[in-house]
Amino acid sequence: MKSIPNIKVPRVFMKYTSRKVLITEWVEGEKLSESREGDLLLLVNTALNCYLIQLLESGFLHADPHPGNLLRTTDGCLCVLDFGLMTEVTEEQRYTFIEYISHLVNSDYEKVADDLVRLGFVPPELVDPVKTAEVVPQLSSVFSQLTQGGGARKVNVQQVTDDLAKISEDYVFVLPPYFALILKAFSVLEGIGLEADPDYAIVNGCYPYLSKRLITDDSLRTRAALKYFLYGESDRLDVKRVEDILNGFENFKKLTMVPTTADDPGKPLPPVDPAAKEVLLLLFAPNGSFLQDLLLTELVRAVDALSREALAELWAFFASQALFPLPAELSAPKSWLIPLPSLFFGSRRIASLSQDDEYSLDTVKRLWVLAEPQFRHTTFVSGISELVQGVIPMMPDLFPGIVMTAQRFILMLLQRQALRLADDLDGKNSVAVWERDPTAFARHVRLFPLPMPQRDRNLKDS
Image 1 (cartoon, rainbow, N blue to C red):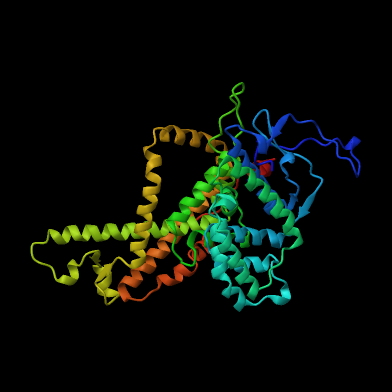
Image 2 (cartoon, one colour):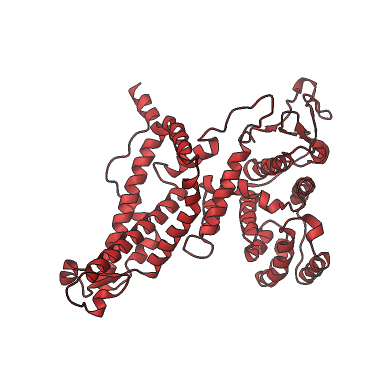
């Protein structure tokens, strides 16, 4: 919880604490549920992400968040009282919860059904894959209503009751003991959130932490969850999900801001906050990371497609200036002549943009539409300047990773374009080898040695 500075946990006086009595410091504030301050919804989301960190990182969760245990302090912080009732969650359950939330926020109820089985909502002896698939329509109906926001007042109670009755006919669902306390914790937070916003949806409130966790956790299970989140069942990037995860990460960064008051304006949020530093170190990890692999893959696809589009446009220009009409084959749109190589190495003279190229170009255009407003913003230049100033102190640690990342990009691009040229010449699909594991070649080849981080050079010199 240290990553969220506006969370306060009262100091415990161990000298006066016994097995039956917990003595902590006194905290001035009001019940969060009774607060009428303008930051109530922000603090509810802060509390939600605080509980998600406990649930999904430490696995040790404060399990008694009734309204009396959540305070808004006089300086605008959230204070969590009384850690006398706790519950533990295993590592397997934590990763399954991450996958469950990821599937839930993306309305993939078929996978939600499988997640509920793995979380223990179905007794092991009664697990039946066929029946699990059969209850997906009813689960979809129930969850689509429960996650739309607005609490019970926006739920068709009769429809939910009918769907649950239908599910119970075919399947036995039980509430795991560990989940009862988790359910209580999040239902209290949802209740307070609905007081602040009648349309509050707790599932949407999970997005900030989920985005941060998917981006920064390089474990195998989270890698798979991140890839599914961004690509779904396809092998092509979903731009809408990129926008969602970036917005979620930005909202998580806002939760790390130190609160301000009229008397104390506080410090502005640094251009490179702890969450952003974590992402930069992962993105430029010298030995690579899954996030780095995903970004390099998409960048290489985009540069390759853009270069081929440029060739097609250049050839179209020269073809339009020809002194005599060219054969239809040589003047087809989005294609270009392969001159000398085709005379010696292949049977084809014409290359053209593929469907994958078209998709990559469309992705680039949609990402540009997403990013363009930021470039037009009046604070863009000053923001870049502040960002550079914030990154400069990190450069000794980032530099080796930047060098190796640039090397991987060059190798990946060269390999892909060589394979594309081979495909243009012989009409085969050699680039499919690259698509199966885009970073394989770059992982095993180095153009130059790995630079030593500054701190390691200092240790070596000493």
